[in-house]
Image (cartoon, rainbow, N blue to C red; front, side):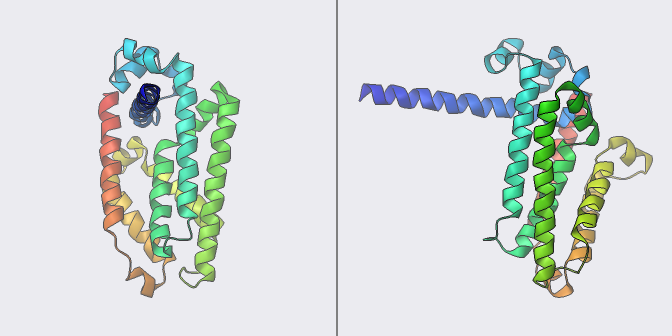
Length: 233
């Protein structure tokens, strides 16, 4: 009995350790969206994670270890997003909203500059992210093709729509772009969601959709985006 209690306690400590590690990595994601990995020093990483160096070394062995584990977190998130969009037990309208929200997430945390930086630093890690992103894109296309076949979506070309979405979202996540055009990210995301509904959904289905989950999601994205900006400052 005592052995079972000890084993359970060790397991709980292990789970807590992983939870904290993911928490610290997540704090870093908004920052590396706008800073090159190769330029980050250990002192920067510790500051952005808001922990001491002693705490850092309880969870990570080096800057390279942080990058590797951060990539694994991104790959896992991409795979979860792919599964969410592909879940045919959910209604098509809910999956449509998931497609929008997950596309925003991917654009937010996988800017092209970050991928190019990763390609130079570690080609094997870059390949993992590249493959996970490709699977995500392919799932998006399959979902839109299903919607067209089911008579829910307008008969658009899914591949072109996915590429269009990526390019647009990548641009609006750039703070310089927002400042130059005197725009706010919150307004742009709201407007783009409305545009996506108009572009894809036939009128009778557009009238049925509840926008509240997407509005709450956009509020969370703006909060994270703002946190990343403050961390850099």
